[in-house]
Image (cartoon, rainbow, N blue to C red; front, top):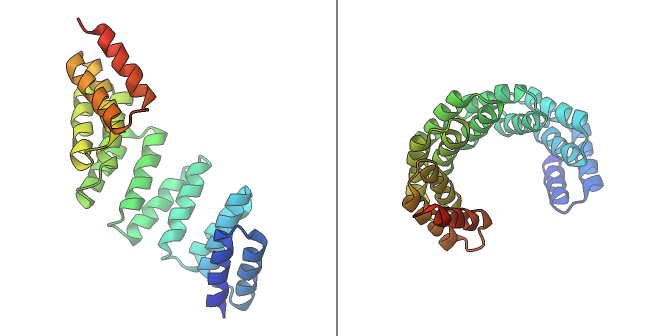
Length: 220
């Protein structure tokens, strides 16, 4: 039974029994060489072992065997992104074609666009994520980060971090980064309030503590 072998391989992967997992997967493929899930799991194993070429080959075979394999395209996108390969975007977009409402696929694409410097499209993709999931706090946070760190548009950063906090009131990084934006705007009292809120959520937040001390020294 290939189904039983695949499940046993999956269990062995979770247990860290790599050789046993490979044995089950290879035996499954000897029985049926069209098992996309087996190639996908082999790709995961090879990736964990640091074998870049065999990982890529296994992931690619998985989607060649089954062109509607969403998890395979996500795995290929993540793998290529980790290698700095621009093909990551193509694989993420293929995943989105298969599941247009997938927040995961859109988020991976947005992060890839952000990391390569395509900020406008990244912002647009984060906005789409908010439409798909109005409770998602990470998308507006990342928008705020782009405005803060890349564009120095501190007003837009404050607005985006505020949206993130509306969705996740204990988001300490959003408090801290909104504090940085307020501080850059010269709004020291608001910055101080944000740093204090970040410390209330995470008392050992070193960056927030240092920022609070900096603002206190700057205040008249």
